[in-house]
Amino acid sequence: MSKFTSLATPLGIGNGGDMIAPIESALARLRGLPLWSAGRAADMLWLALGARHKAPTKRSPDREVGDFALHVLCPWRISGSGGVITGRGDIYVPADPDEDEADFRWDRPGRSIVDAQLRHWIDAHAAAPLRVTDIVVDRCAGFTLHLDQNVAIEVFPDAFAMPHDLREQWRLLSPGRDDPHFVVNNHGWS
Image (cartoon, rainbow, N blue to C red; front, side, top):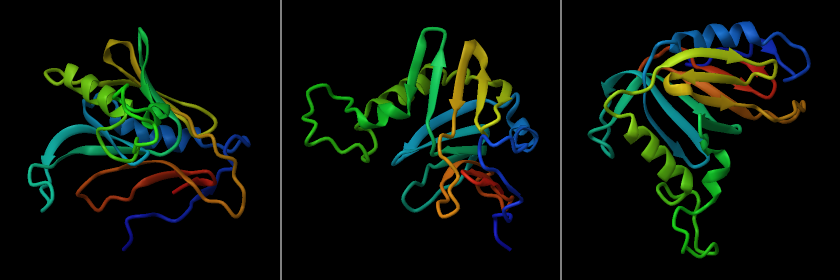
């Protein structure tokens, strides 16, 4: 059986479709959990939440995963009381101010501002990871995860739903388990 459930509801993001309740239900499992790791794969933000579990691979024998992972492909930002900590736009800016933009490869991990900022932010809270304190869902399938210390992770889908164009916005999954993924795209959720 596939990990993915079939498209259950057409969304037409922003068309008044009732996405709030199913998204609130899916994300409610994150309330109270610690966020202990964050990074990216190309332009996708990933967050690890909940208890840590060993999940070694040949390439990464020390790999750990959380009870939940959040994968975000749409615009996002992490902010604190001082303003934006980092956001999706930082992926495309070199961390090294002396790097020639012609040589900059944003798709290589560790090269952009977002990599440095995420690493610094997670390291700053390594001894006591921030916990999800509240979740607010908007009418366009976006949401804000409120964390301790007045930190917020905001996810805001921005793609119009054309019949011929299906683009994933974000997904919530349980790594290492056969649980269905909760996937939001520009047409709905599954």
